[in-house]
Image (cartoon, rainbow, N blue to C red):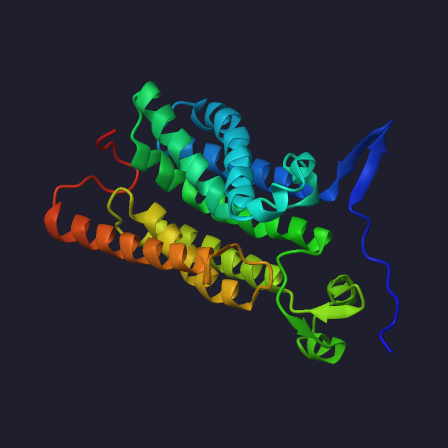
Length: 273
């Protein structure tokens, strides 16, 4: 018989009648840390001081909205019957690919208006984005979502996971695979990788960002296959197919730049808008 364990309270604290959720705090913390890192690198590369503080004011809300739209669109069968829950992002249910699409489109427009190089800004932002994703997955942990299929407590303990993770993976009497943790760890490794290669490899402009895209997509293509809450398009897992497309596009772009754009500026240098 499975023991009864109380999950972590999703509400961090209350301000009167307002509930402040751990999910929002964790997502905001990841965004803030990423912003500070981008600002530091931006200063080193002589980008305008307000580049990332201004950008995040536009990109963050648009990313959340686009992430929710993406999620709701692929779960329309449910939300068409529960329209009042469409805006309930504090309960989870935002899709990272939707957020990335919104953030990238916002950055393209922002750079165009500010006369900045999109690829230069994207390269600087890449380590910040993947670090924010690594931290943000712990919001899924609190909400007991983005997990894999059923497993046993013994299997989780065999992985030498701390009790607070094992206990939180007990959902309605069943233990689940902590795929949120797999993705968080994958992203942390990717963050370290990006920091290393931008120092030791003479990258073309845009290559650091596309390396992030390829790295994230490789991990997501595998981890998505373990999850039980995948967004589906018919019989297909949307994230896996999108990940494959992104891997191909990223590799082709880097190869094209290397082979056909010999004079393309390098990391941190000015390039086309």
